[in-house]
Length: 181
Image (tube, rainbow, N blue to C red; front, side, top):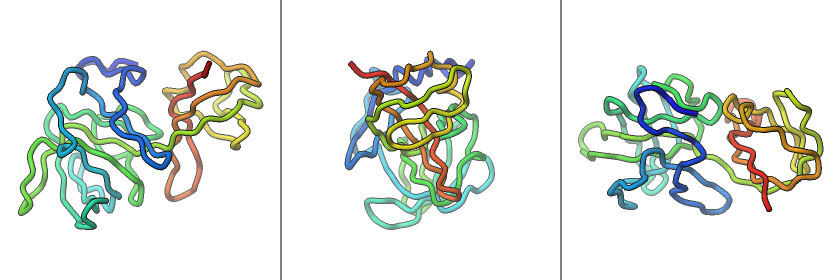
């Protein structure tokens, strides 16, 4: 999936930024970029303020921090995919961001902001062609729009699924379904 005006934004070419306890995220736009672990922050979204600002409680410190998207920031939501602003994000969801400037007295400037996903490996039990959901040994999941563009996967195939869970409903959305082996 390419987004006009957003550079080479292809979810299959994301660089996995971290993986811990089954949680994973991809940091868009990092290929060849100078980025350190100090630039990457995870937290829980408390509130979306307008289209480009949010309040996030930082996982590492427990402190609530206002963050602002810089012009051209890359934004990826667990269900909606690549978006232009923070409006699809849900208070309570886990997020990760790449910070370009930190000012503890004011808003941090953010170059990339996205939902935090859970990575699971499972077996497909039913993947009806043209369906908007997939049944697996780990349960049924709706396919996010980006995953609906993928080639169908046959029942019995082992897959790695990148899952976003809606904090309000508990519904799970497969953002990517990648056959293994």
